[in-house]
Image (cartoon, rainbow, N blue to C red):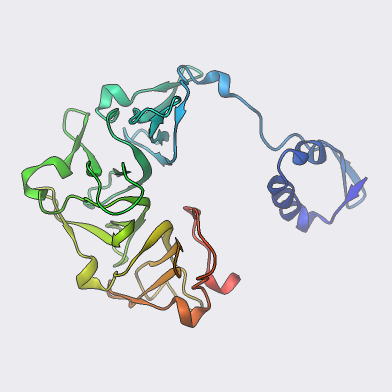
Length: 302
């Protein structure tokens, strides 16, 4: 029989969840909490059968986004390759309708079946109160790639358009292979940039500088978001220890890299960055990174 004070119940369940399959048996066992027997149900239930169409294909990224502003979220799932390894697979956008998860990506212009998507992030890049969707495509392991990324923005007709395909953004299109993307509000205004973890090429930080024309610029060099590495995971948030983010605005950025040290970009409160991973003891140069959570950690907690 397991026992734990009530205050540690959530911590126990979290540890149990990390244990994998063994967790099901553990959380299904009654737990003694302050003398009372409390039966605990399984942490998760497999409801995959509600997915209306669920073909076998390689998928690498997911973002939760309210695409139609109805207060209910959809799940954007990237498509990378077919089950047989063939290049290219459609993205999916799952919407909950009548008890089923229905893929509505084709009707909204989000499928892009010829691309190989490996990362996705959703945030408001033009400060209009609606989230855009940035999809990182990569068809090479590192260096240059054939196909650029997408920045999907909803038009007045309800469909999404890739603003990176517009002539005004011809010089801003990403031509570098990458692994992960993250949304970063570097000035604390609610208007987000998109940071891309390039692989073997300079880092990218895209800002929509003129929402009226959908003009996107790479501002990485001018704001100090610089480096060349094997970028793997990336996350943005209020990360630097001891900073009062209620008064000092702007997100920091942490990058988990391979074949080289990790990066920690500290925000100066004005939207500029300084790389300080070494002084925080976070370089971790002898290990290879993978992915990072979208909910950021605080460096002071680790």
